[in-house]
Length: 234
Ligand code: CA
Image (cartoon, rainbow, N blue to C red; front, side, top):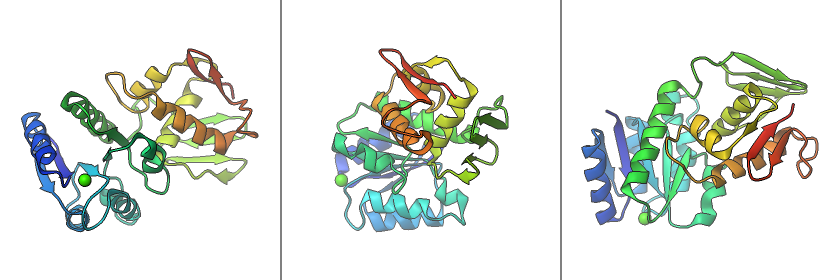
């Protein structure tokens, strides 16, 4: 059972979410106003937050930004955030470093899908984002990944990676020279049990290439294997 904070100003959706999350065994707190939601998270951080993008008081992007900025209080800044968006094209912004949501769902979504995502986020949070059998330090050429400390260094310079980029890089380094399908990456890096939106993987691979490839436009480290997935070649 988890403490889930649902921030959504559309009453019918709010009640549907409350009903389904309660039935799945979670404690559900509801909020319809952005400013109040931020106060609730700061005062008593939930295990997971479902956050609508467009809200009265303060929008979801700003709330997410402010929660992530609470770096002196990891109980707040590490709250898993699942963003509820109305439009597909906001994906990159929502998942980006500036905002830092963990995942998103585009409205309208099925309750089945929502519950699967909630479960995946909670499981990941339980694991601390690190598989228990993972080696603590991974290296490839000029890249060094300190799994336990969640730091990645390239050419002795620390890489500024968002959490999921870090997890993805660590996973690539654990399985070098193997074709990794988008579905496998979603399952193992994102924690999804059923198939999710594979564009999430593509977006993160593109961001990661921008940070570790000598020339991101002609990637040599994370290669696209047409029709199959991606391969990390060192
Ligand atoms: Ca709304």
